[in-house]
Image 1 (cartoon, rainbow, N blue to C red):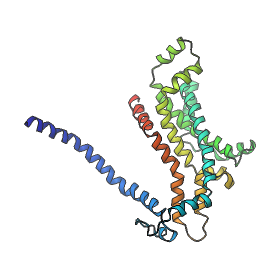
Image 2: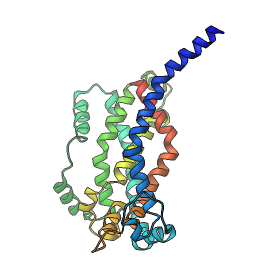
Image 3: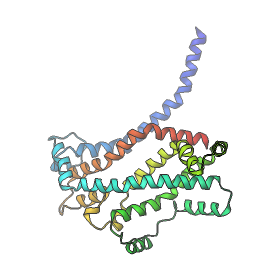
Image 4: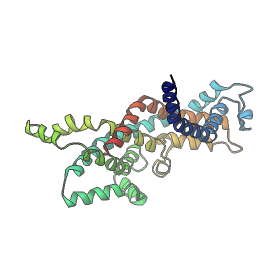
Length: 287
């Protein structure tokens, strides 16, 4: 009986550091994450007068339907959602497909010129994009101010991150799988689509989530490249909606717009959470 008691005591001692760690994380997250989140949500349910106080209290008068309806009707939300989807979906598909193909080539080659181009591509993560040449090129192509031109710019500026992320993952995969497929008569395209892409699925999920976050929330390049409200994405419609009042911010509507702008990202994360965590874990083990 004493041996069982001693074993259980040892198990409790082993679990204590983990419990302490998560307790400290919770104590840090509550004031820095939980309180601002609650402030945003609860004030999006209030009337304009109550929301102006920016308090954490529950609404004295609930205005959920009125606030979120105003965001849709007055905040140009549906137009922004359409444009954000027109930019984000093609960007994610093209960048993941072309980026994984480039990463496969970089990971499997021994050519110094290819290695040079890999470092140049990866360097784009650190260097800011050349805005003026980009605007000049888009103007020459008659795409300045259009959603298509903005999407092309996002594809180009996000390619380096995906190539860098996937190249390290490909290098950890055994080359024998590709050699066996080639011996069986598979072409390079067949090997890429039938063998490599399924193997890259975990890291593609991680790269896709990073792309969704960076593309969906981009504001700086949207202001420079999208000239009209008809082409505005959700961050731009939120900015226009928040700055429309000449007297004071309507915090209830601003917070409601922020929630609706973030909602697609939250849904995407909830749907892909398991795959993303698996990708991070598998990538860490392979690394």
